[in-house]
Length: 111
Image (tube, rainbow, N blue to C red):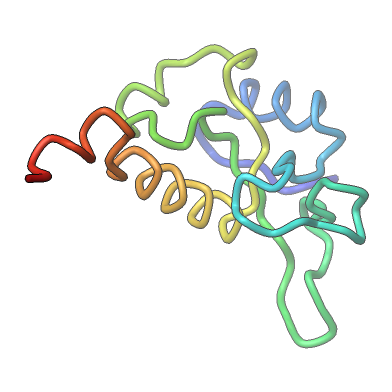
């Protein structure tokens, strides 16, 4: 039996079942995930490494920029299984990309 959260266990089971209990990051975190053929290899409740503890995947929004309050109301079809390191890195990468000026803004103050 795999571990589950106390709240929204049915939703969690649906997301993990669709993901085969494996992190669904495909490089959004900035890692190529070459060992997993482009997908993160972390599996829910499996050990991350020889010295690491078990991995606890989370069901989170497919778009890492979705605010937590909005993500809590999303249906299973709009959620993905993420390991915490991939989700955190994907969120940071998406925030950097959103904050970067686009080509239209670069020439605004050029003289």
